[in-house]
Every structure is written in structure tokens, then in C-alpha cells.
Length: 306
Figure (cartoon, rainbow, N blue to C red):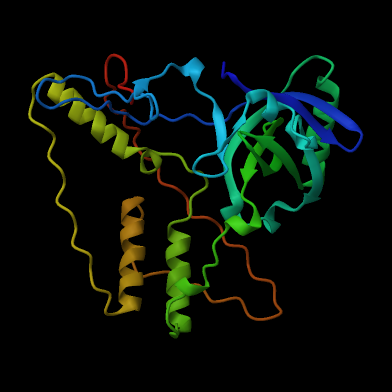
């Protein structure tokens, strides 16, 4: 059972839903400690007071805001828990908007919201069903970890999910990254659409959506543990220079079909939708059945970083 990260309530008009917040994701990355190469001694970081030149324990450490080089304003956990801010103890819903109106760039990590008691079950279910029926998401404010944040509330499998969101001024302007002016032909656009059709899938599952980096690290650790030769790295493919964009698109379509087990052939170039006419709905390409592969799991406990 995931541990509770934060406890509070969702404020929905005059309706209050007491909730617990738990993590919605897991990190399966392999982590490393730092060691002294000469004798394999563990390298650790110690907290040293600059004025006394000695290591201090955790109960001697507090937070503070550096007003000047010689003046620090101490801030306690009690100060932070009693902020003059309504969102310090509640997730306040401010508005409801269509999900498509929110730039995905603003959406960050996600958390599950769990009703904290039997009394909270009914208002919790009310909000779940109302959000599901409206096909909208809620935009809220909350204060965690020393700052107020925007949040997005949605429903996933009858459970409320809170996504942290970035404030508008945290999104950089991409204008300076635009490429120089160039022209793209209609045939090139049709070729790109044909490639997208060939690469369309119904779900992000299968061997192509597995973490191959972590599996490769596990293979190296296992080989060293058993004192076996390390697995050989595949030769990197030299990046091809695209001289003929249409030829590259057609070759990519055939390669994608071959990868999925479909017959290779000329690219199926679709006509672009004409103005003021409804475009025909494209059927996603069927995903070829892929043989499931099981990666060799590392035995024992995974190394953790300091």
C-alpha cells in the first residue's frame, strides 16, 4: 500500500471531501552508490556547519530564508503548516475546463486521491461521477512543499487523480526555437500521414514500450556478478542524410510495416481532407501480435543511491 504523502480535503464549492494523497507512479530505475575506487569504501555526504566546522545531526538543522549575507530569517515547519493561505489545508477547485484546452506541457507528476474516511465516500463518489459525466477536468490550487501550485483533477478508473501543473509564467516561449522559413509540399504531408497511419497503435503496451535501458543495466550487473563477459553493445547506426524527403518517408512506411509483420509494399498515401468537408475517420493499423519477452531479473536487492 503506498504511503500517504499529504492529508487534507478537496473544496468543491460548499462541498468538502476529506482525502489522502498517495503516489500514482513508481520508479523502477536501477540506482547506484558512490564508492572509492581504491578500496570500495562507501562515499557519503555529511552536513557540516560552516561556522563551527563540525558535522551536525538532523535535529539541529532547520530551514531559513537568507535576507542578507549576515541575516537569516528562520522558518519552522509549524510556520509552513499555518500559512495564511486557504490552499494550505485544502485542494480548492477554481474552475472546470475541457481537458483538450490544457497544454500537456503544463501537466507534471500525478497522485491518487483516496477518501480518508467512510464519511468522505459519498462526496468523493459524487465528484467522481460528476466529472465523468461532464467530460471535463477540474483546475484547482493547493500548497505543498513550500509553494502553491496549480493542479488538474480528473478521473481514472473511478479514482480521482491530481496532476501537478506549472504556472503559465513557468512555460518558456518557444518562438526563438522556430526553424527558418521553409516550404513543405502536399505530397510530403501525405507521405507523413501515411507513415503515421502505419505507426498507429491502440495501446502503449508490448516490447517496444519497455524500459530497455534498465534491462541493459541489469544484464551488466548480472554479468559482473557471475564474472562473465559483458554483453556487447550493438553498433550505432550512422544517421542518414535526408536528401529526398519523399523517398525517406516511403522507406520509413515499408520499414514500419515490416517491423509489425505486415507485407511491405508501396506507401498507402491518403488524400488530405478537403476544406469544409468532414474528413473520413481513419482506422488505426492493427498491431501485429508480438511475442512476449521476459527480461532476466536481477536477483537480490536493487542497489540504491546515497
